[in-house]
Length: 74
Image (cartoon, rainbow, N blue to C red; front, top):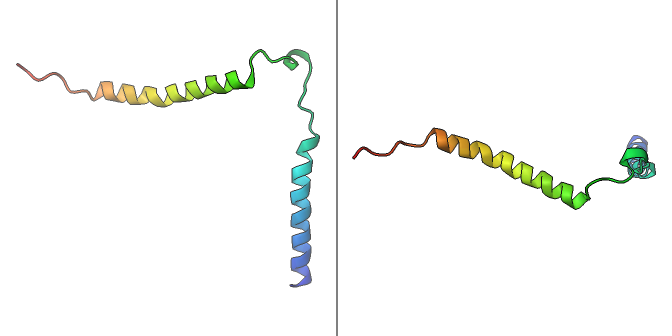
């Protein structure tokens, strides 16, 4: 390999290592009003999932109601 490619690989490895380690030093505990969350992560996940399902289901119901054929004449 050429020297340029070796330096490029070394920089890529270093940037990957820094990208992996720098976020690990972030502080996740904010304190104050966010110190004790009112909902558990599982509850939030279930609520978000239910809302996403409803958001996907609602347009289908609306379209089905709009294109519904009227009853055949008797």
